Length: 424
Image (cartoon, rainbow, N blue to C red):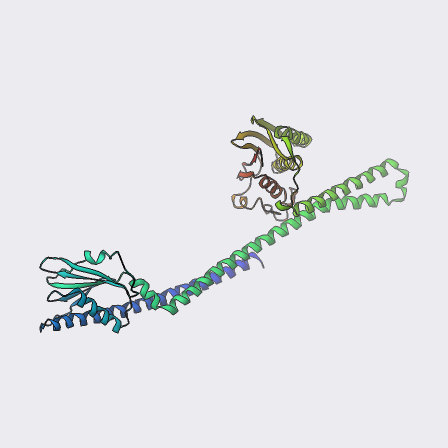
């Protein structure tokens, strides 16, 4: 499946999912508003009945028009013509609420217009649990109308309404699960697509690497098959050496792929011994003298570390240095200028390898240490490799509890900083 098809599928699936979420939000919001409206109506009826019953008990024949007022989303007040006993009010409220299936904790207050203050407040818990702290909001809200009134505050109204919307909460949870699964699926698809691209790039690179020695061996074999070649011993020897060299080159490439492809931290066998980092750096630099001179480049060392000895595997640590220098040369095609420096930090030694090469694009830097990963170049293979070297370096560095850091800017060069502790 090509990239355009994947993008189209993701786009259509995203649009469909957004449509489902928007529709669900619309219906949930409407359902919540409907539940809240029904709750408010039931509370109004209950408080109106309580107010009328209190008037009747006080033998007050006057009629109060619209005795109930909603002060906020969860606070209601009801007007009465006289004071009321708290226990009586509590009993009437619970009876009216139970009759309308309003099974929710509430707080009630009684206001006395003669003293202009709240004369009583209490918290009524449906589950019979004691409440030590009252809700302060109910005492801070006052009616702008003279007279006696009582107020009822529902601190958990929103939660109560949500619980009443069981089917809607369930359906929303299902949609949430679908969204999470969708996001996970998209992530897997993109990851598999990236792995497919890495695999194809690796196959193209390995084909290119193997094709040259195979072709050379084939051509040399054809020359050796010529009848008159036995009369030219020097030429015969020369082509035999070519076949031998190319065969060794091919063998080394296969061994490298097999070894690095199966490299895992838990399978590493490290032969730890005291080694001097500066000695290894100088040896590694010396092995690249011919190559760097041929490319008219230069390797400069600034070995400033005072403490240079650490415990490690000489072969693997040497390979780290070799791979870093090799990459610096390969990706600095024009007059490479490579700087290698060292310095101590509190518990180890820091090695920096800097080049003036092509750099690494920012979008590829987070993948550069992954196995087989190479910056995509299409069918152009001007730089040899399998995308295994940096993964190998990171694996060895982490095996010694060290760290590796990449600093790079496209067309301005790359810097690798390796920190290795003295003792693992």
